Amino acid sequence: MFTSSRYSISFFKIASLMPQYRLIMIKLIMRKKSLLETNPYLKDSELRKFLIEQCVASSSAIEGVHVKYPKFTKKLKKKMRDIAAAQKAQKEIR
Image 1: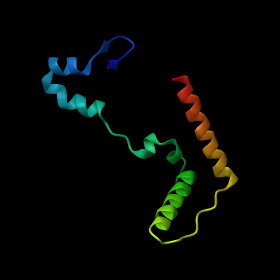
Image 2 (image 1 turned 135 degrees about the horizontal axis):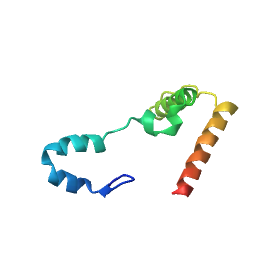
Image 3 (image 1 turned 90 degrees about the vertical axis):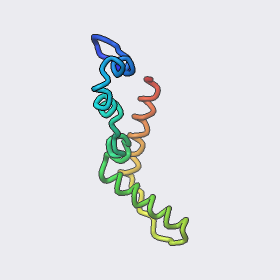
């Protein structure tokens, strides 16, 4: 459903009225976002680097290659808690 402060129109209704714009409308509505745009844990570069290193270390260990896990600092722990708290608050609002 396409909504605005003035009107509310179904995408399918618009597409049936103006078939020549169907592909353009689909591209606008179905635009894919990258993980960096959607995942709040990856938006912070320092936290992203730590999480990727941890993921690589874990995946390598599963394959039998044991590497040293990155150190989880208090600063990173606080950032993760803040993000988790913000997400929880956002879910409660919905």
